[in-house]
Length: 603
Image 1 (spheres, rainbow, N blue to C red):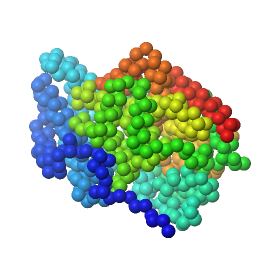
Image 2 (image 1 turned 180 degrees about the vertical axis):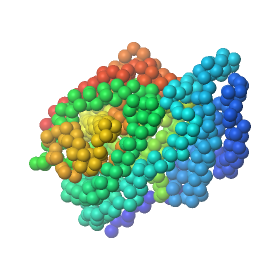
Image 3 (image 1 turned 60 degrees about the vertical axis):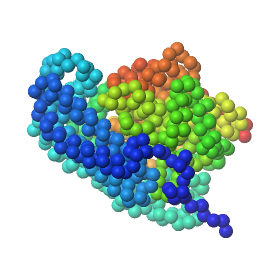
Image 4 (image 1 turned 30 degrees about the vertical axis):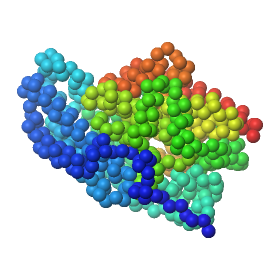
């Protein structure tokens, strides 16, 4: 019998395969020292409260103090969460992470007075402060972002009332989370080897990628049988959460929940509407891809549980980590030598925790703070997917590196609206490189299908979610009861519209709305689709070597939060208030779909 391969212990890994966290704190004792210093610094918060109206000096000293606290909190938090994630079974770092999380919460509470107090000052007073202290001009945009919300901030007593009600208003979201993640019990099904396993939300995703159709069907039917059973409870939690969004928007003098949600990033509602319109117009392309999937799977009827299984079998190429590093440098070469030098630094300076070990957090991410390296967590396996993961996370990390090297701390981060653009631009560049260099038809077909699946999941699926989310908020605002029957009927029809006639109208998919946590995030998902589309447009400009395309793109990476996201993207060469960037992404999808359709005919 062959021996079961065991994951290595953390202590067994080579140093080169792990990230180096000593530049943050040389050891845990240094962490403890910083923790104690910040705890004492927090005790000074009350000294600044109530002083902003006094004079310009007091105003700017309070801002300096606030930013200094948050800067140190972030450093402490990042160290603890990275240490915890590298081995979540290590109780030492479980405790360290818990302490840092508590300190972060305490910091937020100690400084909660700042924004409301700024809003008690008139615009004339604030302008006078800046005129008196021109050396603090750097803070003008930071303060403007606060005062922009003036029309939507209530009286101090009303704000206090809302703050005290926040826990109650969040109860439906909390109930959904507990029910969805802890209390639901799913049936026992058989896996590919015939082993009996208890289905779970995490296992469901793996089952949907199984090449055994009976396994996929059993997982699909089994999962949704449970959500159907609790459909009325989930309708109640979702409805209450939507009512919370609509209520909060109304009392804060917004015209809708959507306007309120998008206003934090100064994103016009037209950006949302344009996304829905352009994607709706291009749904025939998704229908073609779904029909191709049906053909490649060689099935008489295509079901929703067939949408994630590989259609071209096992990947015809895979790369070791060392090979992937070399390919990444070639794929990202259009971004210029300066960019590549940063990537090389990431590889040589131990930004990356590469290997999966016992207890290590699953998945992959880029993380860090203004005063740390932009670290990357991987759980490497030799595959094409992990090559894409590497360049994706590298996109995040180089974006963070440029931002922190260019911007002062106050603007040393970037909004969620922009976050996925740099990472998916890298993915687009890698796809183009592989299509230029790989001549084997099966390899090319696999790369093309990887790209098309990415668009299906990121532009089409997230836009479907965005359309549903806006519909339920609009209907609730009209007074329509969001019953399980109402939600399920609309979602079923919406799913049929998106995927077309090639896929069966499985009754189970009508309950998919009940298991999507993003519907509780308040107009969040559309940003995945707009970000992917913008990345496609930027990659196209860079690859075509349009005038100033690379310079503008690097400017986007360096901008941080020094301007509103829409303005940052305009300077990068993409106007996200217009339809063109999404339409261009659809054209690339169509071109690659055309090639895949032709390629598979030669197999």
